[in-house]
Image (cartoon, rainbow, N blue to C red; front, side, top):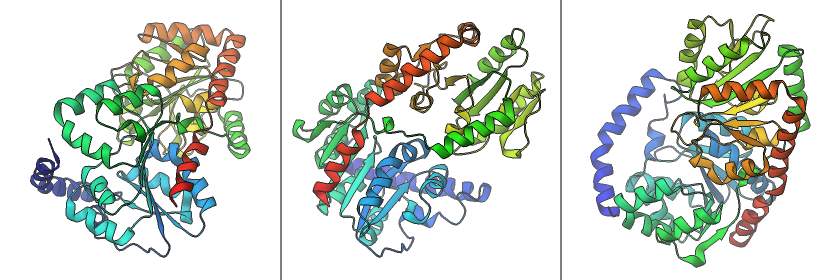
Length: 421
């Protein structure tokens, strides 16, 4: 597929997309009143030269936070505009940055929508996080001679093969229109080159996700929450969990309670639409549950807390003695394990970790992460860790050291910004 056929497809799909957006607007206030924004019709209050950063959704926005904050601090004469594609990403931008940045949805990748948006914004530089490449957006930025950085870039083998089989010309064009690709690891970089990126546009910058710093304020909040919820109880936290996995985690907890009757599980579903479902599953198994969103303090009889709020992953991970990172006991490729690593927590994952293979390999090599293949092995490992405080401390220490040893990406990205602005 090339860009001509891509645009034909996008125009044909537009009525379906519009119906979907209107349906979501009817069902959810997160979409209501913002449909026009998706087509580039929103009038933005642009008062300064713009630095555009596209961060897609929650995970990319959190990862980009150190870079965004640094740019805001270093370029007060510029307006940082952060775009996302999802309501949860939009909410995270507002939560993390408030009025220090401008924000809107990135328009749907139609030529007219993108043109209306860029005519208003006219960015001096554009930074796209990870792999969020949209053909018309990249093409029009390139036509306007706007420097474009693909930051924290990653490319799995599965994604590369998909592009090669279905959209090789389109990807080749986009990669050649970029000014620089700052790939996380050499394996990512090699895949971008296979897809057509000129070698002189590639740098290996590491992952900005290592640039995590845990503030003293957050540490205090974690300590206070642990004291209120479970000051004398062991806690394990399962974050970013999925259907098919939640059932295994609840089964694990049920088995563990026979050996550790005061054990508390905090389970944080990946998607908000699953909050009620997981609460119902836990209740159906006979667990005494509490929901974080309701603000009630778990009692000594509470066995499971549903982490059904947005933007509190770090806070909730901080109260765990053991952490499990989801999307890994099922074939979803796993989620980012660096947040518990930065907190110095022992980490457990399943074997499906291809989304973050380089990070997971570093943590595995350091013995800060251990993997299991099923809920039986998960139960056995958690039991072992609960009975061995020294092992928990050593795993947490090794995980934290991996984070410290791999920092420096932020400064490398800022060097590019300083050269282009």
